[in-house]
Length: 119
Image (cartoon, rainbow, N blue to C red; front, side, top):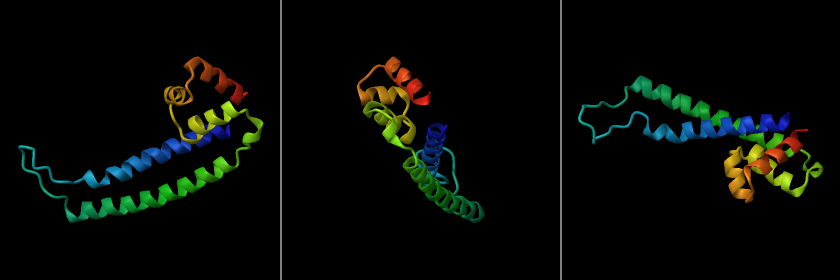
């Protein structure tokens, strides 16, 4: 189902974004530790920077693909409540618990809604 593919892609995008965001802490020198630490060597730093550049390019490609996939979903077949759920759960890849909170409804109601969407 395309909605599941969109959700999976969004989760991959979020994971890659976290990896990119955490790059600044890799190889950092911490002065609050007892042991002696050294700076990253030139070669490993170079490889890390190359990986970061590749990850950023991959992220950009994934985001474009996600946008295209979301645009290809015909939401006119769904009710307003179903559209809201699709936007949150599939397009934004929020958890069911987070969707419950944002939509002000019970978990069981969303499970039933999800079943109707998938059928």
